[in-house]
Image 1 (cartoon, rainbow, N blue to C red):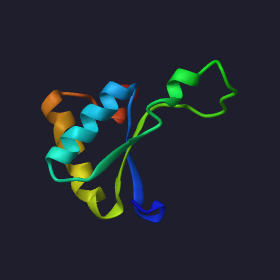
Image 2 (image 1 turned 45 degrees about the horizontal axis):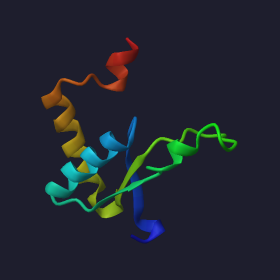
Image 3 (image 1 turned 90 degrees about the vertical axis):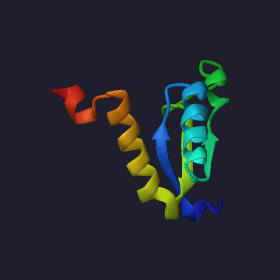
Image 4 (image 1 turned 120 degrees about the horizontal axis):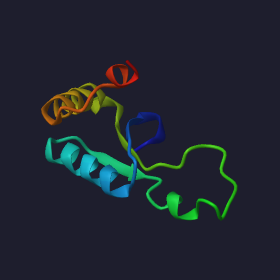
Length: 87
């Protein structure tokens, strides 16, 4: 993927969650890539100024489709939105 065409679609709690999401997107026809999967292992060993959670990247052209899939999966799994969690 070209860097200018990349969009972060998901920030996971761990590598397992990131790969599960990436594989689900791939199964739905969205090319996805997991990044930062090994960075968590270095936490505490090197200075860190930002969260180092695994991320799922996709192509910008797939963003609308992928966001629709994520929204539907959250509904199906009964996962509250961020807005509902803060209430």
